[in-house]
Every structure is written in C-alpha cells, then in structure tokens.
Length: 334
Image (cartoon, rainbow, N blue to C red; front, side, top):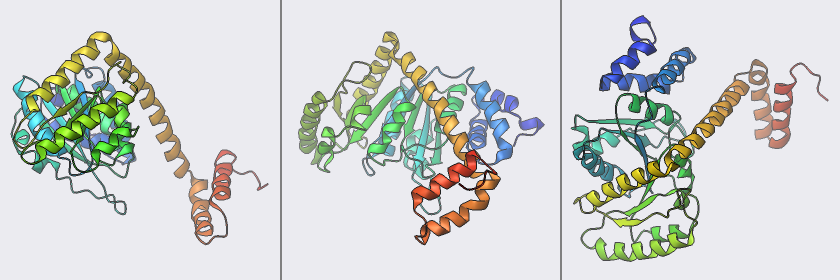
C-alpha cells in the first residue's frame, strides 16, 4: 500500500482532487494495525494536517434504536442542499469476542449514499470506549483534506462513555426519543454535559405528544446543568428523520451554533485543547503497545496470567511484578 506509486504524497494528491476511492484507501491505511504501514500512515496524516481543519465536526450520539443513521441520512442531505460537502464516519459496534463488525450503516443512508458530494465510511469500534473508533481523528483529518467541510461522526451508542466524542468534535448532537426513559437521562452528567444540541427524534404520529412532554422535561433538566464551555446550554428540538419534520430547523441550529463559536473564538480554543488531548492519547497508546510488545513481558505474561486465573496470585501483585520487570529488566526479584 505504501509503494512508490501509492506513497503518502501521491495518495494525498489523489484524495485532494475529491477522489473517494483514494480517500477510502487513505483511511484504510491509517486504520491498519500492521507495523509496516505505520510510517506511511503517519506521513500521510502529517501532510494532510497542513491542508485540513476547514470544516465543522459534528458528533451524533444516542442510544441504539434512536434513529441515528436515519437522521444522518436526512440531515446530511439537507447540509448538501445548503452547499456543503458531507463526510460521515459511522462507527459500528464490534463483537466483544471477535472484534468483528457488520458495518451496515451505509445501507441505512440510501439518499446520502447516492449523493456525489457525500462520503460515508463505516468503521468498526474495535471495542474502544467512548463510542468512536481507534483512528476516527485521523480519518476525520483525511476527509477534511479531501474537501469535506461538514464531518458527521455517528458513534456506537454505548451511553455515558460517549462523552469521549467531545474530544473530537466542534459540536455534539445528542439524539433521544420520548417514552424510552430518555427524559431521565437529563439528570445525569456525562453525555448530557457533552451535548451542544439535543434533538428528540421520531416526533411524528402518536409519538408527537409524548415527545413534546419529554422535551419539556429535558429543557428543565438542561437548566440545572452548568453551561457548555461555549457559555451556552443545549437547545432541545423536535424532529422526525422519517418524515423530515424539523430537519431544516436542526440543520439551521447547527450552522448557527458553528458560526457563533467561530466568531467568539471558542471553536479555535476547543480544537487547541483537543490537540493536547490527542498528543496524550498518542503517548498512552505508544506506551501500552511498547509494554505488551516488550520481549521480557511477552515471556512472563502468560505465566502470570495463568497464576492469576488459578487464584495463586492476586491481580494487583501480578501487575506490579509486570511493571517492575518492564521498568527494571534483568534486576533480580526482590
């Protein structure tokens, strides 16, 4: 993948022309777990960062079944109608046993998939906490380098842990439905505090009255939370991704919030803080990989794991022994 004809510079040049195949190949490269692909992936992202950044990054989160994919289909189509190019990074849940994933979000975004100015990339969550994939940030930067100015990140839908998406986006849209206990989520911190907008979906037919009541409850709950770092609390909107009701208003609200945060300087400050978080994440990942790939650790780890599983050694002491051997290889056991 990183040969002379397909090197990072050539690949970046291709995706900057809007080549969706090249963009898919670029994301595949940065998602690769092969050590041989790492230098090319790093070089590609480093170069892409020089031309990326001119976008609005929007996280879309909510419990499974709330209609995230259907809403993204409607919202993305509306944003394209407003003159934007839309990239969707859809994070699919992975099996806890095999880390396999269905990657079926694209089939649920039929209108958006047919749009020339849309790009949809499903990626497995890989068991990561936070509702996002391991290389979501890198994929987002590549999409920006390819000219997409609205990046929609659909998270797995794992609940409170999805607050981690706040470290990737400019705005977070929390999607809810009435009558499913969602109004109680309003008194919880975590994901509620990470929301810049809240939309109650499926507000049509028999659900309309129930959702209006849920919206009143949520507005009262939001008033009890501290404002977002932008100084604002999230508005609560009603919409139906199926009928299209409220989608225009939702798109307008997102665009208005993006303009407001850009004008105030909050958007730039937020990205600066996210860059610092990204640096720490890279360091932590490198340390973990270095630890488990250390020859000495790989030698003693199976034995210690077996002793822990048999109850011969408690996990705390086993972990301390592993860390001791990693920090002081060759030292005699004290």
